[in-house]
Length: 150
Image (cartoon, rainbow, N blue to C red):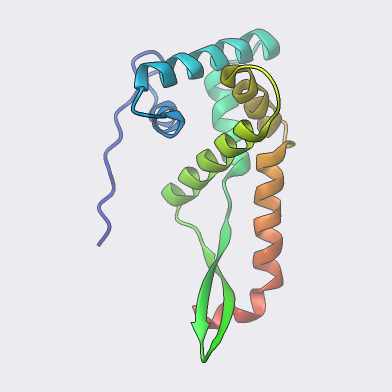
């Protein structure tokens, strides 16, 4: 049985989602640097959109969260990609991972700027992370015939 980790909220926004994001930004255990990056990104989002950066973040994560993913399953010597529904917590974790990988692939300046751009794009329903979600859904749709192998 999987034990779900209890996630505390961050000091500034008092939000669990922010803390999950910080934990994924984290490199080499430098949490204060991860917080700094995220808060800079949030500040930039507020300046650019004049909206609450927390709602932009929520909207971005909601937009990127997948409904179904494919898992590989071996049946009788051949491998199938079987579509499987995603639990909400797992979907949120996937969304955060995709947002950060899309942010890291972006060219240019500091991580904070790239992250803020990617979050704003995702909130507007565009950007690499959204494309990744749509691609995943397409693959799951194409392999719907193998759903009975679940």
